[in-house]
Amino acid sequence: MNRAALIYNPIKADVDRLKTLVASAEDAHGWSETLWLETTEEEPGGSQARSAVDQGIDLVIAAGGDGTVRAVAETLRGSGIPLALLPSGTGNLLARNLDLTLDDAEHSITTAFTGTDRPIDMGVIETRNGAAKTRRAAYLVMAGLGLDAKMLANTDDELKAKAGWLAYVKAIGAALRDKNELHIRYQLDGGAQHSVRAHTIMIGNCGSLPANILLLPEASVDDGEFDVVVLRPEGFFGWVQIVVKVFWENGVLRRTTAGRKLMGLTKEVRALNYLRGRELVLKLSRPEAVELDGDSFGTATSIRTWVDPGSLIVRVPEL
Image (cartoon, rainbow, N blue to C red; front, side, top):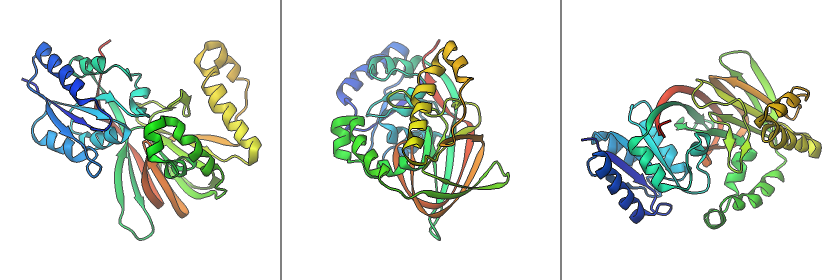
């Protein structure tokens, strides 16, 4: 009989209800009793996933926020063991990009035990801060430098737990007051080196953020490439250009046939540039904060990131 492991964040998951739903699904579909593994602040999911793999588990279910999902997925990368998502928390970035149900635990559990498997790409990143040891990690949705990472660094975790994404409003204001630009030399897919000054750089395996923000409209989770957006506004008008591009063109016009025709009449803006590739190397003039899938990942002066195609299997609903 097949056996699942459920890795859960006790702060974000309703464990009693989940145990009832899982027991019912086990009986209905002929699975053995599920292995339950609780995360901690020190061990957010990676070691629990390794324990599940070592015990020959056939399916891993992650019940928690983006940090839990990323930690579990990082361990499952390349293992061939499917990952099922039970979205919790405020972000649920991967679940949103896969159009999974966000607020129906019963549906998510049913999908875990009866769904189909979909291979998706993962991003792998190596960061170094000066002479410090190189750090390596994997991410599912986005890696970011600049405003994005500074916003996270300024976010009050207690307020986030109580108010969700409203907690970021104050943090965004603090990040926008930071006038320091990123000074970067980059190389895409082994090509020529380029220099750029920017406010923010986002490297995305997926394109959508919470609040229906479509930041990277061409990004696909299984195309073997990542999409990069460079934000370099010059004053207030530059931010207006970015808002119009992201919220109006990407968020409204792109979603209809008529809107896409109108987009053909618009021009690209200097404040926002898109790139696409498989490997990106960045050299920074000073240590900068880095974020992965909505969590801070220290600071770095050099970064190398690349796509690992089809390296994670995700359980999705059957069509």
